[in-house]
Length: 119
Image 1 (cartoon, rainbow, N blue to C red):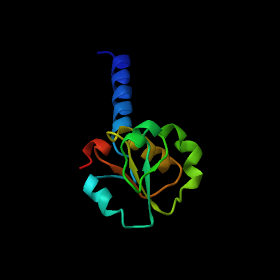
Image 2: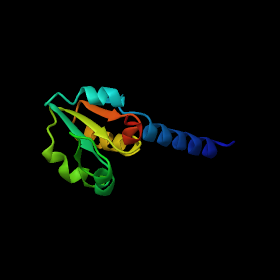
Image 3: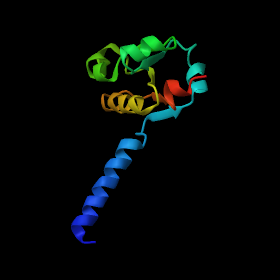
Image 4: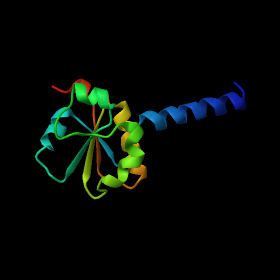
C-alpha cells in the first residue's frame, strides 16, 4: 500500500471511531439505571424518536423531542440538570447526546439499547 491508501484508511478509521465511540461527558446507562432516575425531579428525560414512534410506545416521564427538532428545542432544556436521552435502539440518542454535549450540557446519559431494551 502506498501512502495515499494509508491516509485514506486512517481517515475512515478515525471517522468510524468518532461516530460510534461515546463522547466524553456522555454515559451509557441501562434501562434499570434510567428507571432509577425517574424519582429525581432534577433530571430531564428526552425521547428523540419520531412522534409516531413515541405515540405507539413511550414511557413517562420521557418528553418527545424528535432528533430533527432537537437543535431548535435545546433552549427549552436546562444545561445545569442531568439529561437522559432515549430512542429505539440507542443510535439516534447517541447522536442527540453528542449534540447536547457540543452545546454545553455536562451530565448526559444515553440509554443502552433504547426502547428496544425496555422491560
